[in-house]
Image (cartoon, rainbow, N blue to C red; front, side, top):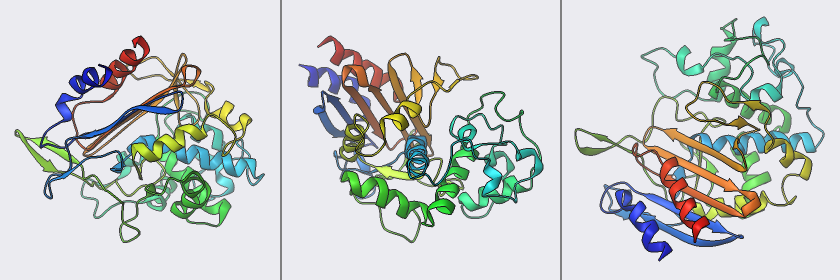
Length: 329
């Protein structure tokens, strides 16, 4: 009965168009785990629990976890100034700390707004630093307000590389993905390892689906460049209940309200890579051709993950409706 109700809510994703993969975990076990629609329209490949989607901003929780792992190693402090690693940043950035990057309170200018309209190719994290190094201004004094910042998370990925001496994709693979058995998850770099079971992104244009898989900002890793599947994210979810990866203290920081979210059409606080609304931990991710959401109620041992390779619909409402069905079941 639950599956029938869920399938009805997911009907829009089903069929021959771009689709979605849905996972519902209760008490650590999957009670819904399936794909809808197509991962690749041109090849007619159906989605499945193994299909890997570009997570977009759901990636930020892995960037935050990487910083916390290095803090656990004693290799950095969360209140270290960012110019410790990037002296090329202008004086306006003097007081910005890692903690402020994690919580979107740095005031850094959005790198997307600094890119030329005719930007050639794809910008990467190092390119974000180059743009910010030329911009001696902030939106506000660091630490004084909240403004969601992809720039901050691009810099955090670069910090991981500087401190660890390892390229960011390799650090993620070694310290997080391999240790948790997330073998189909990676930070994607063109020319590097291919994405296993890859979903391609699509946008609806004049009533037809067109592949819209990459944009000029799709190669930035720290803010949104990770691909993963619902099966691998189940392993990630399990690791967030104990100290196999992050210590109790690190998880408490990540999952605690650090700052109130402002300027958004919802009520929430922000931790480190997670939004917090009451007893709900969540994050959405949106980029060209992909829309995703992860919802976690740790006290209820309930998680809903919805990954999609299409620009519409926005998945948060559907995921919440599915969660309500499970809670009422």
